[in-house]
Amino acid sequence: MTAPANQKQIVWRLHLRSSPQAVFELLSTGYGRARFWAESAEEIDGCVRFQFINGMRTISRILSRQPPLRIEFDYFDSRAVFELAPDGEGGTDLTLTNTGFHPDDYHDILPGWLNVLLPLKAAADFGVDLRNHDTARTWDHGFVDQ
Image 1: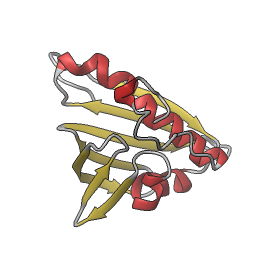
Image 2: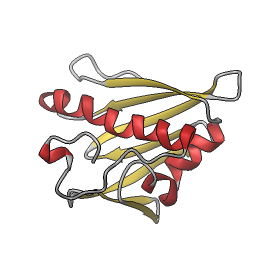
Image 3: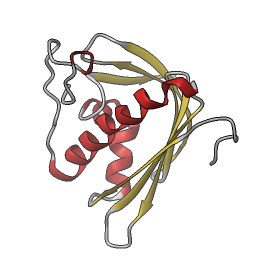
């Protein structure tokens, strides 16, 4: 998937030692997403109701789901695609592609995805939640471990 010439896109890659099935489970279930992405992220009728520690809420439609290799969301008025590929050794090579956001938001969105992907790796590979879950210590306050 490539963005039109006049549109910016974000592409991040992440290697996980966990299987594509295990990573897909984290991305595709409310329980999984709550382990690394949001305080809660339940799915109702194909839409994920994200609730974040800073009080922000959004509803994201799941645009496609192809277990265990791909899931795509309408996320904050953009398109976020997670593609999972077996690494040949039992792990996963994940590619996140984010398109459709306003170009002026690029420098805010780019590091924001690290606040999703690195906690995903910690949860998937090490069973650890990197977030502090403290409403006084959020991204809005300059904390990366919200």
